[in-house]
Length: 325
Image (cartoon, rainbow, N blue to C red; front, top):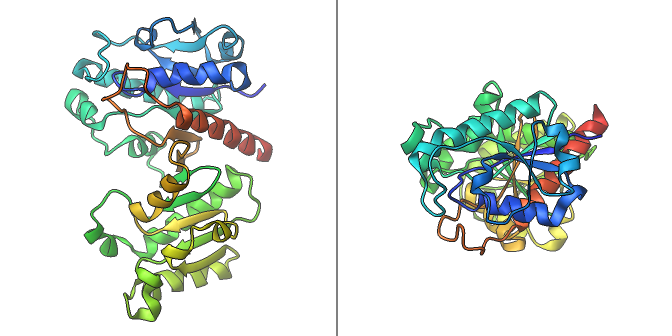
């Protein structure tokens, strides 16, 4: 029997707990997962099945949301993070990683965290989830993929000002991003011969150097070198013509040069069901592609679609890895 998916609670004052309850209500035993968190943070009248080990999740999911309890100090406060709870949020992430690395969970799915709340309440020293998970994995190199049924995209540079992208876009960074993406498409998505499209940085992919030199100086030479190694790459492509339906049929993932170049197309195509995947970790990690939504927490207005897709993708990736073990 495949181990269940571990779902961390994320920021308890956000929509994470209610999304967990909604996801269980739709998935039940069809996709066994368990929540690591405080049962007191769940919406009233949520059927809860407290478990003492992940192995109990499948049987428990038939009667309620399986919860591996992790008590939090203070009261539940939807919409307003409680500083005293920040360290517990971090501890839950650590606990989830431990369970996955020990083989007790097949993959890790993480509900959104509130970075400022963690920094204020616990001195959290990482920019976000991804960097903390990479540190827990021993400092491995990772990249961020946004994925849905319509498209997979990987931004080479992420949360930096657009003015800093040309300086940050080095051959070394782009090569690392391509190699990690290529390996993950094989290992985690079961694609034996991945096809990867690479966007240019400038309009019209630089138009032969008249609109920028990054394509001729950095991107094209790297693509040529990696092609000779056997990696199936196309590009550099003009970003304004690579995301329509016919173009998407020609590749399995798109490498983009900066944040919005990657996220605008996937959020336009499938806003509610996009999934954040961390590639390069020794374990599988997915997350819904949205934040804590403090403004609607506890109001019953949250949409569980991205959370459900994140759980489904975690299960699919776990099966792909298991098939190659």
